Amino acid sequence: MTDASQLVVGIVVTVIIVIIVIFVLVTLFRAIRIIPQARAGVVERLGRYHKTLSPGLNVVVPFVDKVRPLIDMREQVVSFPPQPVITEDNLVVSIDTVVYFQVTDARAATYEIANYLGAVEQLTTTTLRNVVGGLNLEEALTSRDNINGQLRIVLDEATGKWGIRVSRVELKAIDPPISIQDSMEKQMRAERDRRAVILTAEGTKQSEILNAEGMRQAAILKAEGDAKAAVLRAEGEAKAITTVFGAIHEGNPDNLLLAYQYLQTLPKLAEGPANKLWIIPSELTQALQGIGKAFGDKGVPGMPGMPGSSGTPAPVDRDAVKAAQADAAAAAADAHAEAEAATRAAAEAAAAAAPDAGVTPAAPAEGDAAPGEQTPPA
Image 1 (tube, rainbow, N blue to C red):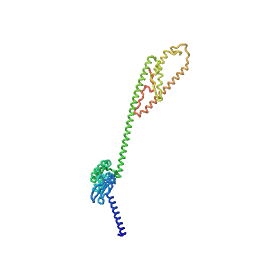
Image 2: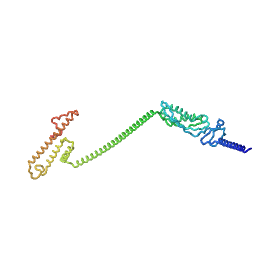
Image 3: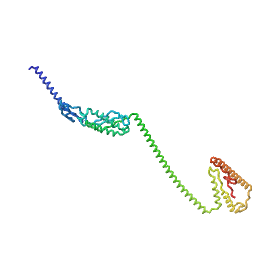
Image 4: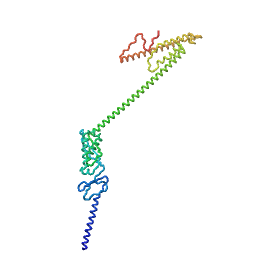
């Protein structure tokens, strides 16, 4: 063999060896498969299911076994777009759903359903329409737990043969039409206004009741205090009257002292700014007569002509006596004129008030004393 032939043979052998090495490496690479945790791989041998690869290092027959795409065995959360649903009272509401599911059997999820994610979405939509279609809007808004439970039961039962377990179904949002939302807001506002009015009325009622109760208690306490004060006042007046009465009887006063006290009490009848008319009692003349008799019987020392006087009679100034008598007569005339004027004013006031009251004042009978005058005793 020539050098050229040996060189060609060497090159061919080298190429064959390189090809064999590459083939061996590729075979080893295809025979060893590493599966991550929470993943599963389905192996098909010659187009038929052979086994399911578990997480870790796995060996397959290269060029004979085929590993399908890995399947996630963890629980997955899928949020589906809003779906229009018609309620029992013919209202269209938009409902967003969230489904929590987990693949439990990789073989069933691969061979029993073509697209298990799309199947879960469509099954959720149809089941949701069936459940919500039997409820009115009010029940749909307030019965989310019931709807979630029914959806989970139906989906779990239907997806069991697909190797999928539905653990939870949640309604993320239930959106009624805009007009219905406005009506609901108005209804809620009216309800809150009604509750506020009721609470205000109840508060006012309680306040009035408490105020009335307080006023009643205050009136009762005041009445009790007035009653006790009246009793104590009456008892004090009774004791004072008893004391005065006893002192008078123990002192044994004569008629002169009683008449003098009577004359001291008489001016008090005219006290007060509103007293324009006052009546002189008939006992006044009797008191004056008693005082005169007392001085007449006992006499005044030093005055001539009076019993009980002693010594030489003093000369009498007749002009002074006449002047005193004239002054007394003038004072009596003035008093009589004032009494007549007061009587006339009272009569005019009574006549003016009589038409309003519907009563005609009776004219005083002839010989009767006018108000303010006192018929002198016989």
